[in-house]
Length: 440
Image (cartoon, rainbow, N blue to C red):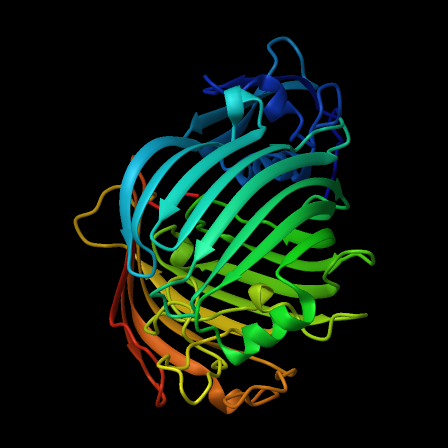
């Protein structure tokens, strides 16, 4: 026999924040799904905790209820946070095995002046590229969570002595985006970018790039419209420890642009926490992309091609070295190099584990990984002699290795030791790859 006596409903009188010495109370309060004066609900309290953790501003978030003295139906909700670095200011000298010497200065702040807005300025110069970018994002442009972002950039790339064809590419553009939340973790983002592109070919260009420039010219002004959907529940900031994220995107150069093309992409990753700790993790990530021309543009512009190989892709192979090769006249002294493709497929699976004698695992990460991927094309140029159309999964490249990443106070530092498992004739492989000083 059970006798049940209902007690009084309990309401939240106040929500009190502590530990946020930099972040404004408003930034925390707008993430709360549990409100003052409302019925205290365990699910809403836990959802509020998760939303605060997803901000990436705090290394620790604790929510506790405290009964109000003299009452039986009221509690206060104490929210205690520990702030962590959410940006960097740096002037650095770095080196990348793919880009050589890197000189950079940048300011990036995900929690600008405690407002929750993101401001970033980057000025980077390397042997093969120059990049100047200013961007600003307000995640709560409206009280309903509609975000607005703006970006202005100038990029100049000179691929001389790189693993891809020798040409110079200049881009200057400005863009505006708006994001609309459709659930607690999902968002749809619309954007438009005006971009001016200029191409300067070398003295001995490949047959493919020569054909493209002869057909389309060497200077383009395009209006690029974009739409993307994202679903993210990652926890842990720069080095996530739990959760997932998936995003799908579509970019289209609108009719009336000098080049008419589109690109669709899908990226997804997930972390599994092993033994309920943040030290042993299993992580998988996949990325796929497809692009092509439409209307008066027959192919995806070669400078919009996908590339694979190197850090962030298929480690163990030289940066941007995989995929279809370009072609040269018989009297040319140049060797065929990767020209990229309009189809991309890459994937990574890794086991993340704690390094012995390291106390700060929040800024140091070690892993054993398996990478796979390649780029393909379904639209070979008529002048190509090394091109094969279509996707052949037997041509996927694989590698295994060891990765070590340290988020230093100055800049990220990463090392990769990788072994290419099925390198073919003509592939460029690298056993050791590293990056230093490339924060943005």
